[in-house]
Length: 152
Image (cartoon, rainbow, N blue to C red):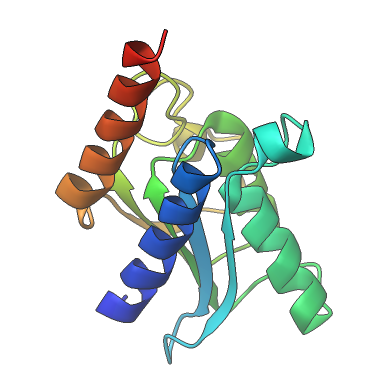
């Protein structure tokens, strides 16, 4: 994973922030070359859809772009630890690897809570790296939620 991939995901998170969405950005990229295939950010408020998480939108876009239903040979970077729903989708998509920034102690589904990839029922095991640019990703989220609390 390279800095361009992080920057693309962080730029998506900033777009989410500007749209008053929880600032999470995701990028699907070719594992061996780092070529970016799809980018997305949270759109749950904009789309009025609880399923419009950055990870799901990026996976959907990548599958459509490539004309496939499985993303073997591709990896995902996301600025926040995926929730259980997104972790399940990552497994179903057969991504090679998951890289993420900030951990999510409240709703994370990878190292927290459901720990989706630790279950024997999760047939597709992937390479996982956490804490990639965690300080930058976490600071954006902290700023967003602090701003939300102060506006009430």
